[in-house]
Every structure is written in C-alpha cells, then in structure tokens.
Image (cartoon, rainbow over all chains, first blue to last red; front, top):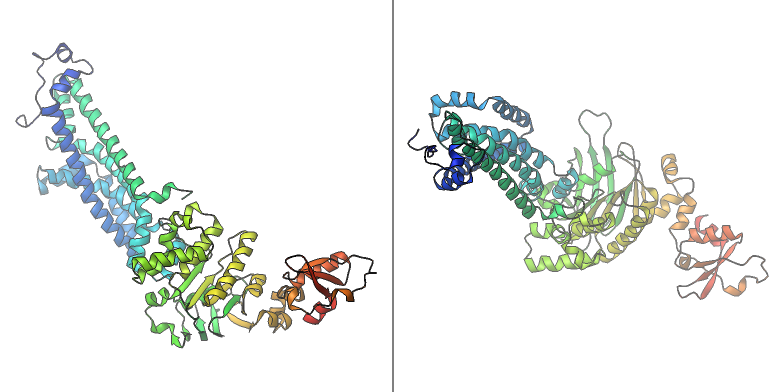
Length: 238
Length: 323
C-alpha cells in the first residue's frame, strides 16, 4: 500500500507545527496539496460521479417501470431499502469474493445506497403531476408517452433534483469508506493518518474539510441546476 | 371559422363494474351543429360521464356517439381528442409552460408550422381577452379567471368543431364567473363551434344554453328543450322541482326589455302619484319587474344607453310573456 499511498509526513524534517502535530498546519497542507490532497479530491469526485451516474440511470429506469406498472412500485422500493440496511463494510466483505478488491466493489456498494434515495424521489416526482393537469393533457390528445415526456417528467424535475442533492451529499460522505478497500478518495489520507502511531491531525482535518467542502460545492451546483431547469417554480405561488 | 359539428348520443349506456345503477342510462340526444347545449342536473348524476364519453376519456358500453355522422369509436382516441376542445373546472394548465406554450399545445401536436402556431396563439390570447404580455407569463402568475381564459384559448387553439366544457366556471367567484359566461356566449356566436357544457347550476344552464338537457340521477334524460320551453313547461315533477318554483322569474331573465312591445311615453298618465322607475332597454325583464315591484308601480320608463326615454314597459307585458 505504501507504494501508491500519500507521502508519509516526515516528522523529522517538517516544520515545528508538523513535528509538534498541532491542530492544523497550513504549511503541510500547501506542501502536500499536489501529491496527496488534490489527487484524493479528484479520486473522490470520480468515485461519487460514477456512483451517481449509474445509480441515477438504474433508479430512473426502475421508476419509469414502477410508474407504468403500479404493482412493482412497492417491491422495488422495499428492495432498495433492504440494500440500504446492509452495513457498508459487510457489503464489501460480501462483494470481495465476487468482484475482488477493486473499484467495482466500491461502486456497487455506493450505487446500492444511491438507489434508496433516488428511486422513491423519482417515483414521487412522476406521480406528483396534478391529476387535472394529466387529465387535460389526455383530453387534448397527448399520447401516453407525450404525457410522460412533456408533462410528468418536466413537473418531476424539482423532486428529482431534490433526490439528487441528498444522494450526492450522502455519497460524498459514504465514499470515504472506499479507503477500507482501496487507496482512493478522501478517506485514504484520513485512514492513513489515523493509523500512524501518533495520528496526524493536519491530514485528517484537511481531508475531512475537503470532503465537506466538496459536498457543499456539489449541492450548490445542483441548486443552480434546479433553478436553470425549473424557471416556472420561481414565479408566483407554484 | 369552422362550422360546428352535429353530435348525436344514440341510446348510450355506461355501467361501472360493481354498481347496480348505470352511470348513464340509454341516453339519446341530438345536438344540431353550432348549438350551445347544456347538460344540467344534480351532482353525481352522470353529466360528466356523458361528456367524457364524447372524447373517449371514458368508454361507453352500449349505444353510440356520432360526430357529424361518424362514430367516435371509428377514430383512434388520440386523433379524436385533438379535434375536440376540452375545458375542465380545475383548468389543468401546464404549470411548467408559459401561457403561449400552453395555448400552442394542440397546434404543435398537429404539426402546425411555427409561424402559423405563433399567429394563432396571438390571435387566441386576444380573443379570450388577455393581454399580449400575459403570453410570456406562467400559470402561477395569473388569477383564477385569467387561468380559465387561458384554458379556453388552449381548447380553441386548433379551431375544433366541438368544444366540451365540464363545469368550467365552478371554481370562480361570482363576478368573474358572470363575466366569463358572457364572454363564452360571445365566443360561441363568433366562432360557431358546437359546445356541450356541463353544470349543476340551473341559472347558468338557462342563461348559457340554446338547448338544455336535464339529466337526472342515473344518467337518464328528463327533458331536452330550449330554456324557455323547459321553464314554461317542465316535463315532470323532477324537472319542475329542479328548475325551482321561481321558474317564471327565471324565464323573465331570459328576455330583455327591448324584446317586448313598449308603449309610448304619453300613454301613461302623468298624474300617477308614484314616479315611474327607469330601466335600461338592454336589462332583463326580470330586473325591470323587480324595479316596478320596488317602486310600487305597474309600469317603468325604458331608457336607451344614451339615457333618452324610448317608451314605457307595462307590468302586464311581463304577465303576457310568462302567462
């Protein structure tokens, strides 16, 4: 693990802040931004992005199915909720024999957790179109598909983006546990620093703060996305 | 503008599973092209079911509904609906679309060109009494009355020969409601579309309709005639009770003062102790009679819009009208 791990803080040659292991040393953070923190941020973002992308496609497909075939709606929801109840470390243990110590294993776990958030939100969004709006659409001669694409889906956007916000923020938090398996993401510097004989505070706080910052940034981005996609909800009382 | 379509209900029956009483029972109605036909009756009586069977939002079990001689079952439902305007009480505007895009819905479904659609949308926004500037607004920014105007414009967009209206003004305040009733009458005269209009309000039915069909519980037709004929000669006790004991007054409300023979002003003695009330020539006979009763006289001076006296209306003319 040491080959591709972060640079081991050198207590002998670091600044007095580092050698004293004070709460936070800016000089260490600056010095190791390029070789430790920045790669971890990018890996973390990548782990999250893949999980959200796959999770969204799966949840969207399942939600469309549930919207069309009512009787599968509840069983799918229960299935997603059951996946969520499995502790992530246990899930890793279950998956390793199948998919090995790989990014795939991590992503399967992360995707499973996004489903329980995204699926019900998308279903609720699709079902949330006011009945009179759907009736008017049908009465004007929209086909079933047109009702979905022109009415139900656009009206579901606020609920879908709402689900995405929660899913993204929670996945960014959960993705730190990827470090149990792989030297990847913001979890790795934290684990590494914790395991040192004397846990190195600066690295733990820096990685933790970056994870929080990443979550806030992504959440803010989604809020802006919602505004861009839903101009009608800002006006009047809708 | 297009001619309206002739609509025929031919022994139409609809039963919902698990219910003994039919929702619509053997309903037969002939609605001549261009007629404003009102279906009126108690709530839950099957009027709305009858209406929704025309555009096949509900399918009937027996009988047939024909539009200009062609069964609605001969059309694919989607194609049928694009040719029929549909207005509902809850309006159902698309909240995520501007007024303009809402109105453009059916023209776009029909594949009209961009220019033709834009032109038609602008025309309709004006026709229903909205500002051109309202076109860029979202439904949530409009009042209830404005929204139903948009609903009306949207239903009329592709110039359909038939317009179905399901209690369109039921959720509006009385003032907005009266204003829209007048405008829909005006639109009907201008556009010539056949209208089938559902309401549970007998006043609305007799003031709006050329023909009124009274539907009783279980979707059975109780009487189908002109408003005046229904008020003058209710077919049975149910209709008499439904139109109310003050049906003579309702009949007076169907006529304007100007439609009655007036007497010359000098024929009324100036010696009359009470000064005669003044009524406008375009007000209803009902309100003229009300003025006379209030003033304790048996005649009223009729004045035109400019305020000059055009004659005298005697109370006896009102007796002749309903007698």
